[in-house]
Length: 113
Image 1 (cartoon, rainbow, N blue to C red):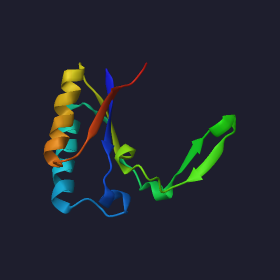
Image 2: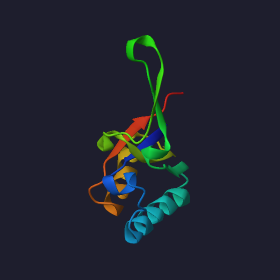
Image 3: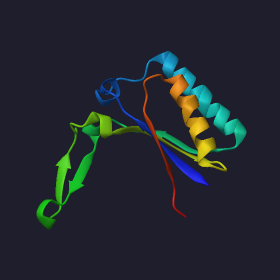
Image 4: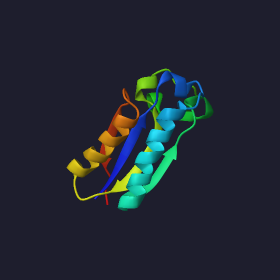
């Protein structure tokens, strides 16, 4: 099964500031563990929402809204896709990221297909 780990952003990342060096080093160590275990398929960081756009359909007509977006807690700072045998295993890997960056929030979603 494949799972997407959606790493939520925070105010510092959304402002374009890089993660603190120690947090980045710990997260990189988790990614390396995942590579060594053969479960990591993709790992990418995302730019702040100020560099993006959103398409909305108010009243049925498409409208493009340029970033930044106000609801920081709903935004994603990075995405990892892993291949594991169960949701429990995906949760265990996500917890490793949470240990690397205390206070982080990660959504774990199974990919269809």
